[in-house]
Length: 319
Ligand code: AVJ
Image (cartoon, rainbow, N blue to C red; front, side):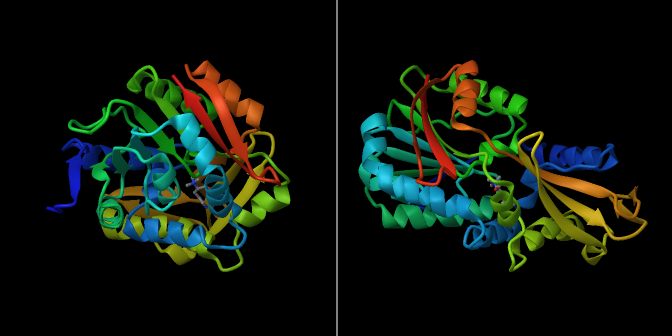
């Protein structure tokens, strides 16, 4: 037990089993797909943190610059003494840019990657001794409730990084509706959303020259081997990522380099040469497009902040 962080395990006992079933169902489907949440084992979370450092991956850097520049503005909008709830808190880096200005009474980090979450929230609690820090290991793509015992009366959710982009627009609407119901009147949502832009910038961001995104994508197969006892050779697949303009989304795939069969939990999954496993979609929105989506989900768009080149946008929405 960490004396600095209050830990809430919100994965129901059957979660591991049902995650596995979800994985198998996607592999058996046509076209084959897996949810991006399967990327985030410990190694996957580390690789994602490394992606954020790549020169081509403008999202993190730009969002952090916006947060830095707008922190005082955001604090004025959001108000002090909130209960700040970060969804998909990962390394809990971005929230640091807000803590001094926002001065919340309580911080809750929610993440699916347990060890990573515990390490990050521990560092946060050490660095901000005045802050009450909680950690909840949970899959926020499933219905959830806030854990008991959080200080403060006014929850404000923080959902940075354009993680919302992993949902289809319909799913995003459903997710926002769920959040709007979880938040009491006066509660808010500070959310980072990647913007539609020139495809060359988008394609480069998901095909970094150092190959970190490729390693992140292929790590999914490593995870299948180690955690789910799959028989699969990652070197028999290659990374593919491209902008699908019609659907305003980046698609990531693992392309089979030849006809082959992999095995997961005794189930055989056949791949033809060139066939893909669709591992992620990352939707991009215009500013008005996202405000409309949020409005339709029960939020009132209150403000937004963007960068000079209109690469990324942070919205503040209230219920
Ligand atoms: C965490 C979903 C925002 O879509 O940009 C980065 C994940 N995938 N590179 C994104 C990701 C490949 C990222 N999100």
